[in-house]
Length: 124
Length: 373
Image 1 (spheres, each protein chain N blue to C red):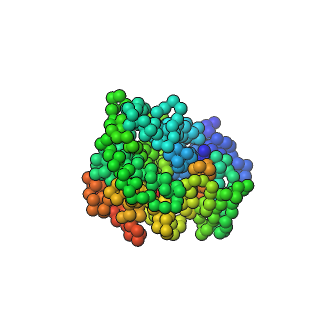
Image 2 (spheres, rainbow over the protein chains, first blue to last red; image 1 turned 180 degrees about the vertical axis):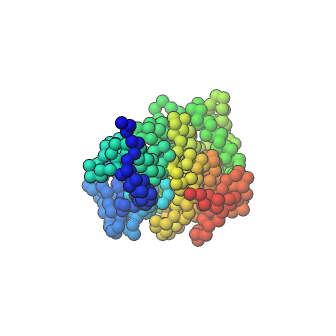
Image 3 (cartoon, helix red, strand yellow; image 1 turned 90 degrees about the horizontal axis):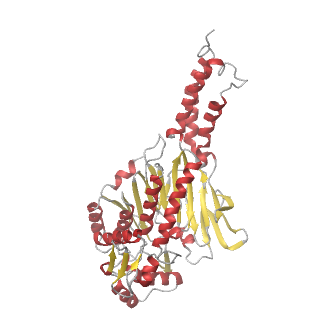
């Protein structure tokens, strides 16, 4: 007996294909939008903490009062640091998904993760 | 190094169905027996919305330190291991070039631009070939911008840097004028064959801040491209280098935001452009500056006035060569609009300016970059 290449029930599958395609397109369009953006703070590559950007707050680096951050209006900034040049503070607020601010002397990185990305990167 | 979270879901359903192959008990007819063909058809359809050519995914890695900033590499790769290998090649070369081009520190076993600044007035200093090549480009940049970009301005920028770091006062004009006597690029003697650099005057020094980082990133990108990296985007402390477009069917170019020079703008960009196989450089006084008596003084010094350039809040340039985009954005930030626009046209650079009031200007077809996608 020859095996059939397909059977009756597969009709349903064919009917479902357009629907599955539409659903997946919709989902993929949403990209990272499923999770709200958060700021992830890393020191020397290791994650120190992660903070939501939906509530305005000022806080210091855990165990280090010299470095402070502020979340305001969905964005975050270094507001003080014990580094010599303060470039991190002058960078100002970052809140766009994928955007970053860095304190080079302290090896501290502030990166906005999650959220829906409108651009791949920002030139400055 | 991390894999971007976005696309995880695009792959797993394909893998789950394709690899498993077996029917789920609760959906009897669908995958039974000869239904394999239909299942494969479903896989094919599922692969479409992932949008990635050949199933490539977006990966990114950051490195803090080289050129005193953060550098990000974004690339589409088949898997993490492939991306990591490219990132290794890219960052290793980039860090090596940083050691060659560093004007602040010397490193064991290499004579670099810091060595040149210390000793090149005594006798020609032997340097790696990459250093003489950079300085020849810097000479070319100085000539093409009529000196608006001048890598020999080191004695002047060093004074500004010192005062900026102390953050209390302005440097005395007399000191700046004296330093400017030792700032002629023609007095930098480059022997390409011998790979040496010599200063004709004692007191000279080089500052390659507006050329070294972008050039290093493009050289490192070329090496990663030789290793197989194609679809990639680099952000080297604000300088952007785009290689082949993102490996996604839904887009033709990389989307590059341009930071708003007005700090009060918060999260809003001033513009977004779409580029591939191109580079972008932005010059502005909003990130390295200090304040004296309520006035802000930034780091881009006009060689004519020896003061921070004050015509614009920002200048952005797109050019296929990273070092040229970098040099031209500096020059266009300094020069009057007409001279800058003529320069952009002459060198095939697309240019964009923002003045102190937030008004924007374009030159030489910059607008065409806004309509990609």
